Image (tube, rainbow, N blue to C red; front, side):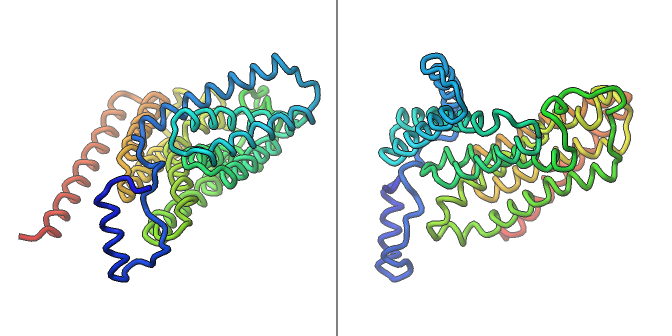
Length: 338
């Protein structure tokens, strides 16, 4: 289904002139007509409804074994898949399918990880589950959400691969466990965590014109959306890991090399905003900018430096942003010509 008549006319003309093959998939489909904020609202509501549905099923059916919980989760996922296939244009069915999908994922994860005591196994299992959901669900919003949570699960998987421990070690440390890694090793861990994701985002963004012309866009578009959102808020998702590595006493410490990590979180959010700008996705661009501001506020309040140093940092950032804006404007004026 074409969203706008003029787009359909353009495609028909290109086909008549032989510039497009007759079987070329249409670049605009019916599931793209909703504004991004409506999709965001339905996504949040779907998550809330899914958790309530899972709670209701637990109260009514009272499953007493991991096998039964797994079967229930698989049935919920199948029901969500059927609803997505039945009608992709009705908001109610999409939202109900999302709720069923969330409840099914939680149930399956619960069944698989009931006796797990390894944080690496837990994070890795959630990562694999999100990959499976991304692959099977025939819905862009569901795939974007799966891609987002896959990014977060990837962050925790790499962290617990380098720092194995029990689930309690995520939030609580015993005496003397804080700051158990050096700066160099923390930087290596950061590169292993975010380096592949950043490279993948660059690859998908720069090759948009290639995959948009094929059916691969049905996977690449939600994958890139979830990936960019994950890069924008990745530092927030990993905040508990900051406490686990550096300890809660790190809050209010003086400026040192560890300040690089929240600055890198800001840089990733700005990078996500740049990619969103390249993709002409204003909703994603605004979200990434908001995430960058949140990271900046955390950086401002986390470290116990003097107000003078904070003012200097903010001034330098402001000058850099104004300078970048002037360069962009000058480049645009030069390309526009006289």
